View 1 (cartoon, rainbow, N blue to C red):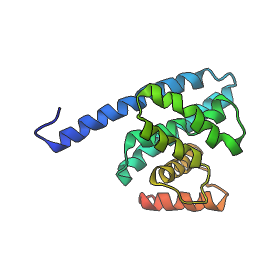
View 2 (cartoon, rainbow, N blue to C red; view 1 turned 90 degrees about the vertical axis):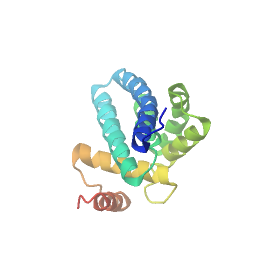
View 3 (cartoon, helix red, strand yellow; view 1 turned 30 degrees about the vertical axis):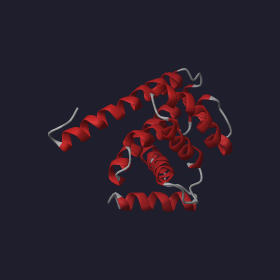
Length: 171
């Protein structure tokens, strides 16, 4: 409990919230380590870690719930990597697969709805959605750029990357 100092209360709450993400990330990494194909396993781990770190940073910058943002990032491509689903449907399938992970990690029903909505929307970089969905789209683009240094060829993704980098004073 926190009575005397507001900053200390914030950090205690933040630590408790992020413990759920730690449980979640451990389970996801265990599942990724079970991927038989070494190149897919490597891509799953590197891209997901890069996106989760970008999401946590962007959440702090935008004053959004870091645990929800990081959880969405940890799970945004889960179907792509663990079920080898087609890229065009992986957002929807990843959202469905995310529910038991989130329940086991202790996220509430409203939180799960927010996270799975963001996962469903994350591939639609050309449109604007809710704040968590937008953060996940930006984290996905920024994470990929930090991972491989490639500027996206798709104009919507390219513009999104430029916007995020300007917002963070990186350009």
